[in-house]
Length: 171
Length: 200
Image (cartoon, rainbow over all chains, first blue to last red):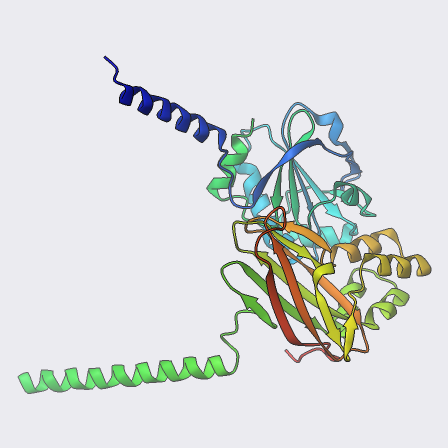
C-alpha cells in the first residue's frame, strides 16, 4: 500500500530523472547554439578538389576554421590530427578550412604538425567571414540536416576522452 | 661508532640547510628578475577574469604582416600606429561582455579612440589591399563585441594612434546575459607604445 509520502517521493524522483535527462552535459568550451542553417561552404581543397557542404548531408560535420599565424590554432591542430583516427568508426566528417592563407603557408605548417589533413582553402577569407566564427580557431558542429547545433569556443585538445565521447555520441 | 653516526647526521643536516637556503635565494633572485612572471606584459587576474596586455613595437608588427604577404603601403600604415595585443579569458561561469566601446582610453592628456574596423576598412579601400590581407588583418584584431561564455578566451590587437607614448585603459565589462550583473572594471595606468622591440 502506497502512503502519501511514498507517492510524493516517487513523483519527485520522476521529476529529478526527467530534469537530468533534459540537462545536456557538454565538454568544456562547447556551447549549444540555436540550430540555424549552416551557411554555404563551397571551396577547393589544397589539392584543387571541389567541396560543397550541402552535398554531404546525412551525417554530422566538424567544420573547423583556422590560420597558421594564430597561436591557439597552432597548439590545437596536432590534437585534431590525433583525434581523427580515434573517430574512424563514426561517420563524423572533418571539414578543415584555412582562412586567407597561401598554399605555401598552409603546407609549411600542416606538413609538420598534421600531415594527414587536407584543408579547404578559403583564399580570400570570404567564406570564413560569412560563417562569422567568434574568433580563430573556431569549430562548428553541423547536424545531418545542415543545422549548426554546437560551437566550440577557442582551442582545446580534441583528443581528450571527454571530447571523443561527446563527438562519438552526437545524434 | 655512535659519535661517527651523529657527526654524519649533523653534516647532512647542515648541507640540507645550506641547500635549502641556496634554493630560496635563487628563487627570490629569479622572481626579482622577472623569471617568475606569468605573463609577458601588464595583466590582471582574479577568479572571474584574466586580461593580459602585450605592447608591440612597429618593427614587430611590420615583421608579422610582411611575413603574411602584406604590401609595403599597408605596412607603412600599420607602423604609423601603436598595437597592443590583448588576451582576455572569462574564468567565471557567467556571461561577461567584452565591449571595447565601453572602455575609456586616455593618452597625451586626452581621450583616445581605438582604431576599429571602420577605420581600417577605409584605409584598405584607399590602397586597394587584397581581400586575403584584409581578412588576415581583421582576424588579428580584438573583436569589438563578444558575449564571453564560461571559460571562453578571446584575443587580438587593439590599435591607437602612433604618436602616443603611454596610455591608460579603463576596461569595463558588463556581466550576465542581460548585462544586469555587477560590472567589472580593470585599470591599466601605464601601457607603453614601445618604439623599439625588446631585446630577447
